Picture 1 (cartoon, rainbow, N blue to C red):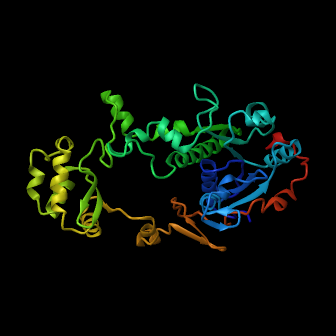
Picture 2: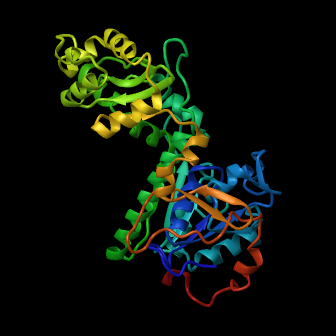
Length: 389
């Protein structure tokens, strides 16, 4: 079933990627109307088996989270005849996405510069690697946690007690997926003028460095290496998690007006004019004292009530919700942030809301090779010249 509407309806994507960054990118394209053909090896995307939990046999919930709205076909690309079938798929494809180790396509006689750009001049080829094709780390495999370490993210995440800590979700993989989508859409936009595709390269390493804000700018400005500060913001205070009588809340005050409102709500209005806390620079210089004052004032309060009251007053504050609380959150329901499909599938919806061409959810995550016959029954050797694409 192909999309009949959506902002990317009519776009055909051949997806050779596996695990997370690439599949996340192609699910975004699929949610917004692109036809995505997921090409899997005979063994399948390894995340099919990253469970429990499992949706069904051969479909782990991990796999399901980034592979809806796709058709799955099986090709053994180590075989020349199977590579020829892939090349026929590319004859009417707009985008190829892959995250093979550097040099793999060249080894198979399908390098972008030598073959793909010549045979399919309109093809946008999105390549995702860990570190790129060359350079000191070029060609090495990339993994989210490794790049969180190499790109500096772990060095600013954690406390003196915990030490450098991995961000608790695969941030680098997913940021790379988002940047891959950006690059693909930019290349397709440029193709409208030039008539030509191009290679779009994203690496986990580059993307990891790209989100080191404000730590990189702070280092450029001061020459000081950022330290572990836990939940504290390096440039703003109060901007952290603070204890109440029933748990912690995240308070993120951005200006003196908000700070005065916070102090008024907590019954300590004099704190807003205390020389130690009168402006952001002063508050940053007296973080420990500020924390003591705020937490003393909140010692007998309820975290959820504090968060709700402060937000209503215009002071940014949030309760620290667990995953089950997020799923049950009334605002998440209002924003339609969860999807249910036949077969028991549940997933996180697209966060991009479009007024005329919203995301659509057509297909549950596919079984391994579920659509092989459907896709290839119309893929006999084409009489159309590949260069005409």
